[in-house]
Image 1 (tube, rainbow, N blue to C red):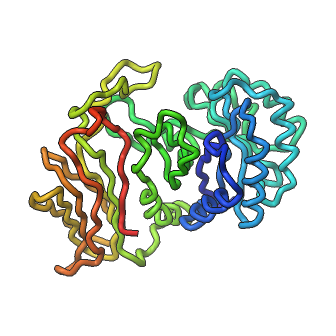
Image 2: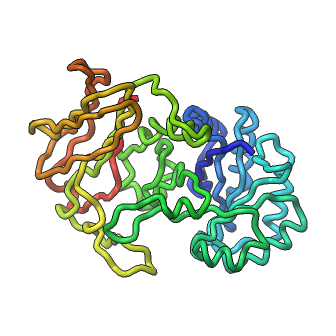
Image 3: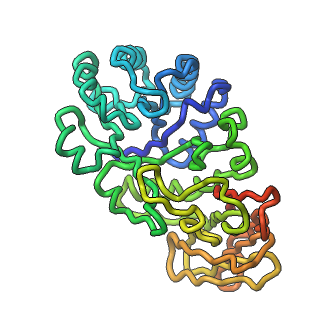
Length: 357
């Protein structure tokens, strides 16, 4: 079976989507090598039918794939009969992602309803990879293997003030989470104003993440082929918050999940400008904050290079340049200004993302 790459698309944020909005998202996803959207759908959303029809219509038109990810956490458990009805409605669509002729299906949580899937898969052919991350790999292995064909993880965040490793990904299947979950600040798709949940505008507006897609095609090609592809164009992407974390009020934001020990958000985040350069050969990356002297980083070989530089009290626009043998190969990218303190007094923990593409 060929390797595929998915991104989760939150249908709950698409109430005002038109078919053309789905086409835009699909074209952007295809451009970086994403093969399918996992359509995250909650049980009580009254526009599911309209938007699923729009999504599948656009995907059929553009030769893209989709599959359902039934969300059991947002609005409660799904009734098995409703799941069966939806699967039957779209199993004949050329846009339906399938494995060995069976519709590929996932979930967000729903461990308490795992037995329902015996009924579901008896009624309709499916290839089932749920996200029952709360059970953990060991719990999943011990109690769920007779129901599923594999497993998907939503375990993407660090626990406390420690860097995240890839260990958890090695224990699960992984996917890009997410395309448009603006309310949780983890979106790589364009910001669609009508899709921003009420109350989230204050930390999503003017905080684009599009440039996080700039290096995706490189990562995806490496994943699919097993080796890093040649770099055909130099590029750089950078991301950072727009003020020091402790310069404003946390507004009740914490750095832990509800079931984890309390930890302040300011203890988890880092006041740094992060960047990734994708270069064709040995290069120098310079990062300048405001009028301060630029910090330089030497890249010794072609490929990806990731690093960061701390704020250290510096404010102003962020400028990043990639040069080779003293000549710029990526024109200076100018990013949003870092300020000493947020204008409204509240720290925005979301990232501003920019890049050369």
